[in-house]
Image (cartoon, rainbow, N blue to C red; front, side, top):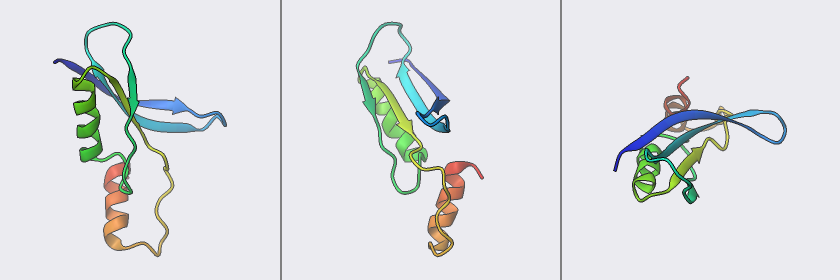
Amino acid sequence: MSLTTENVQITTSKGAKMGAYLARPSAPGRLPAVIVFMEIFGVNDHIRDVTRRVAAEGYVAIAPTISSAPPPASSSATTRRAWRRASGT
């Protein structure tokens, strides 16, 4: 099945911007939707892959970046590196 994917910005109820990864079948039409929740490391390659696999089953799938705040300085170096990779910073 052919898919359309893109990074989108969602405006929250408080006016803030939240990034998300969106995947859907390329064919037009109304489809059911699934929200794919991220792991601690954000919307990374694995979550984008899960989102595409859900879309390949005929759903509009979106994986929002729930938290854009960096991890606290007391977090492990691995967690901080993973957050930087996932957030693109």
